[in-house]
Every structure is written in C-alpha cells, then in structure tokens.
Length: 88
Image (cartoon, rainbow, N blue to C red; front, side):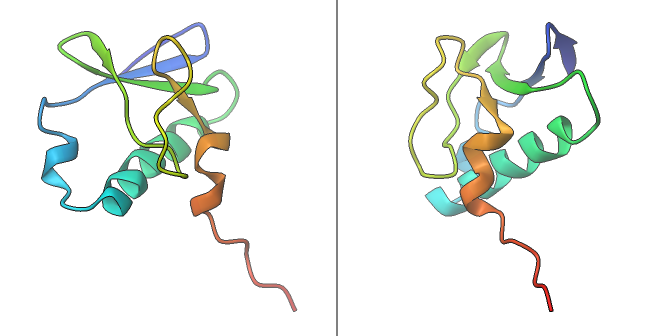
C-alpha cells in the first residue's frame, strides 16, 4: 500500500475480484478495504486499486463503477453498505 496526495493505492492480484463469487461479496470486500484505509485518520480520502501498477475499477456500494478517471473510490462510495448503529 502506498499513499500519495491523499490517495492510498493497493496493488492486488489479477484475480482479486474473481475470488469472490458474487457482486455483493465483491462490493463488501472493496468497501471493507476502503473503509479501513480511510478510517486511519487524516491523510487518506480515496483508495485506488491497481494490478501491476495499472488502475482497475472495483464495484462501489451501489454496484456501479468508479467515476474518477484514476478509478479511485472514497468512503462515501460505500456508505450504502454501512448499517447505522442501533439507538435506544
């Protein structure tokens, strides 16, 4: 994992998403990594996944592909997967 300009880059295996059989599992895996890295404090706001140094898209929480030219995603892209804590 490298961090530059507020974006963490994770170089993953070429079959990273193929290891997860369903789109919902792919969303959860990508979301977990993004949430973990962006929760590490100030300095990381986006995460880019790469294979061999080339940016690759990962599914966002709503199933769509990233809209950024560099394929990066943010915590906001996965908020739909986070269940609010119960209160009461």
